[in-house]
Structures are given as structure tokens and as C-alpha cells.
Image 1 (cartoon, rainbow, N blue to C red):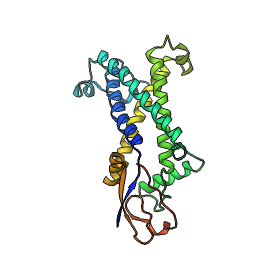
Image 2 (cartoon, rainbow, N blue to C red; image 1 turned 90 degrees about the horizontal axis):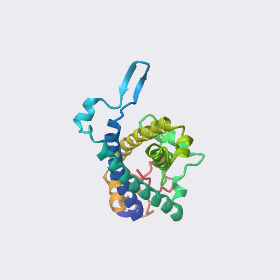
Image 3 (cartoon, helix red, strand yellow; image 1 turned 60 degrees about the vertical axis):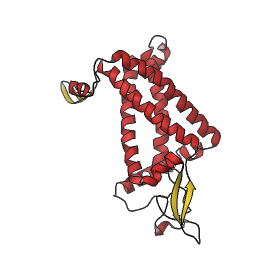
Length: 245
């Protein structure tokens, strides 16, 4: 029989869906700003392997000659990004959700197991619980990255007023590099996160929209026997808790 299983609270869903467009728009407006000083590349000496970003890229997406507009949008969105992140951290702290999110001494080993399993290299199914080790590391890292983006952003926006912060972060140039590197990190996180959502299927996506999943349950034992939270026969002794994508 099928059963509706609650998964994400309304608060978690709101924080998630507010943060996604805000951060996406911040990256977009950041590209407008970066156009005016596109100095970063991968290479050595006079050899360039990859340039961030070529003129053709800027012109194709109409990113050029929008420095003022980009700065205005970026600084306005910064407040939305900061407030949403702060409220999320406070919610996880007071609701006790942090107990599931923070990595522990087993998280890194489990993250390797999860990665190998997802890539099809290992057949050993990771233990199912609310957040596996890979998710704990990824979601906690994003919070740290958000704080890093805020601090480095302030350091390069007001290097005189926040001179102490700029120096603490290694100077203006290094703070600028960190800010750019964190942005690349968000893009990579988005790509992996979206790929995992697609892989998990509609039931998992619906949970982040409506807050519940529909699971196939054994009518005798009331254990979940099908769906993203089901365990293979070899792991039937575990009592599963729904993982989050």
C-alpha cells in the first residue's frame, strides 16, 4: 500500500526556494561586475588554458557594459542572501536540525562510499538516514561558503572602511580571488545538486515542493519497501530514515 511520508518542513522549503533564485541572481549580477575586470585564468606565465570569461561569452549573454547595474543588483541581493542564510542557521539551531546536518567523524568515510556508489564503482549500498555523510559535508560547506562570500564581498566592496577585514583575508587581491573561487564553488554545487535531484526522481523533488513523499509500505510491517528510501534486501535490518537531496 502507499503512504504519505512527511519529509521537509515548511521553513526548510521556504529557505531553499528563496535561496536558489537569490544566489542565482547574485552570480548573474556578479558576472556583470566581473566583465569590468576579467583578470582570472587557468594557466602559467604567458600560457592560458582557460580564461574566465572570453569576450564572446560576455557578448553572447549580454554581460558587457553593465557594471553599474550589476553592482546595484549585487548589493541589494546581498541583504536578501544574508538574511535568508541567517534565518536558516537560526532555524536549524533552535529546531535541533543541526544534529542531522553537522558532519561527524564518520562523515568523510561515508562520503567516499556514497560517491563510489553513485558513480557505479561500488555495489555496497550506503546506510540510509536523513543526511548521509556526503550531504552533511556538502550542506555544511555551503553555509561556510556563504559566510565566506559575505566577508570577502564586504572586504572588496569597502576595502577602506573594512580595512581590518581586508587585511585579515590576505589583502584586497587575495580577498577578490577568494570571492571569485567561492562563486565557482556555488556553480559546481548547483550542477551536482541538480544532477542528484534528477537522479532521485520526482518523489524527491515533490518533497521539497510539497513537503512529503509517497512511499510503498509493507502492510504487515509498515516498513518502506519501495521508493528512494527503501533499502536493498541485504540492508533490511536497518530502519531507514528518508535521505535528502
